[in-house]
Length: 471
Image 1 (cartoon, rainbow, N blue to C red):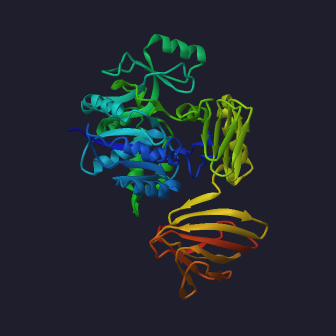
Image 2 (cartoon, one colour):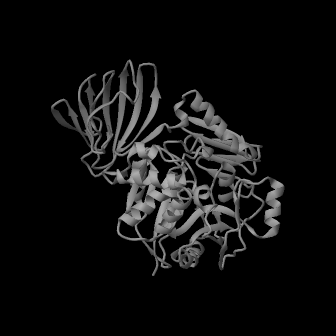
């Protein structure tokens, strides 16, 4: 049975689904279409009997490493490697990193390159397409999966090939996102497919083609990988070598230049969920065409997407709207304008607003915290610490803290003293005092932290010891 190693590209920022997706917690790590995240769905859809699946290789941003590790843990899936990109350099270098890692492990497997944020409704059909593509990939072909188009979509690139869902064919050409009239002509011809960005090839085949067409990328990636270091479960690269790598996609760097490209058609309910309107299309609707998530009430409203993870939304007499409520932002748009949400994100970044990057609830390797109130000289956080987890041993130059245990048990270190706190007990940490918080129990620890001082930024943390290797 053919051994296939999944390579999951998990480095996107997902700004087109703001405010639910933020740069520090983008859409691939969110539960948008079901109870599991898109990243977890990408891994689980490979669990079938059609082929032998090796341990996945994950390539992600350094900032997302603990999110990836936690979501892998939740699925009980072990990775072969979690490779951390210090900077984004697009998909061609990322796939090269995975190929080098696979070969270094003593094998030359087929690599199934997948984005972490796509929806595929028919997992069995997808796996069968992978099996059909594997023979050609084993023979040295670089196989891409072309999506059978459902309409004249202008938001996707296209692949021209006389392929079908039953057999592969050589790729004639890749084309950019077309205008509407061109997309209609593509659809009428029957020879064009949406470019899914999914690939299957031998690790050595990809590296050989990359060396042939973009040797500068391969050279920089090899140098960055040669200088790698292990950090817990993660693989860190030589930062300066990777920064010197050219930025290019696998399409531009290899697939559009190689004469070894082949394509198989795929009709399995694929979507890249690239906007709020596409999420509306992929979701279940009520009788009036509304998609409602969270605490939502509608009256005389139709074809809306109403998404709340915080407050109640009531929609009256409106249609074709997208309303997304989060604890720190509300976005309202016509469905045909949602692609322009990135302009809002650009404005937020220009004004250095935290809402462009962070949710109010911020994930940490030990749990999370939620900033529930803030003033000029105070901040109130709700802190959740996972069982067995602990924060770094740290101190602050500008703030003091009060900790109140709401539920669970806390082991608190202040200076050279330790004490246990139970529900409804509290403690005080003066400015400049070293301290640490730990959950020694088997249930989550819930706490309220009240900070007071002249400066309350997250960069006022001096770490002396940290389980998770953060500086």
